[in-house]
Length: 193
Image (cartoon, rainbow, N blue to C red):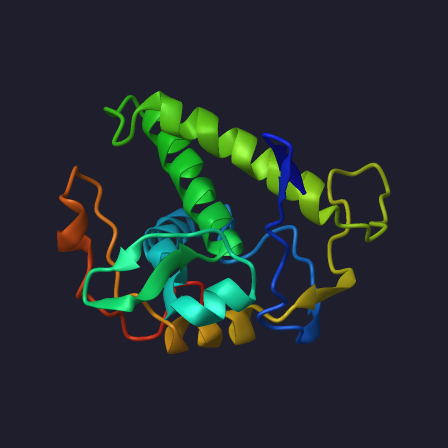
């Protein structure tokens, strides 16, 4: 809860999907396998954080006590939001790309201030969600490898996002806002989950 000018603005989790599933933590995955760096780069470049930009009915948003948001340019009865987890995925991809570009001497695609925002956004998200799984450790830098944990079902979240898509496409270059809309994806966020 955030206190703003004496009023409380509550942006609670909506529990869009309360589906849970058991998932095994992997120290090395298709997003980090050091023996398949080219495939790893492809996996990361296929992630579509904009899949989580959704449009919902204005009255639904009011009933959920969501703050006012951008009117969808093609349907003024809808408001545009980004699902928090997809915003964090956006931030993670920005930080990773910036790290990779710095480490290989390439020019930065995004201003460094964007990465600073993203680091802090991830910190706030981690503190807000406060994952409390106790991960085993043998002191070998493989904390929690192979350990099962209970997670929200990303597939259910992806499906909800698909069903409420704002048909928004993100770009690496400055683009007028209205040009982002009207580009529905195929229902895949590139995460393969």
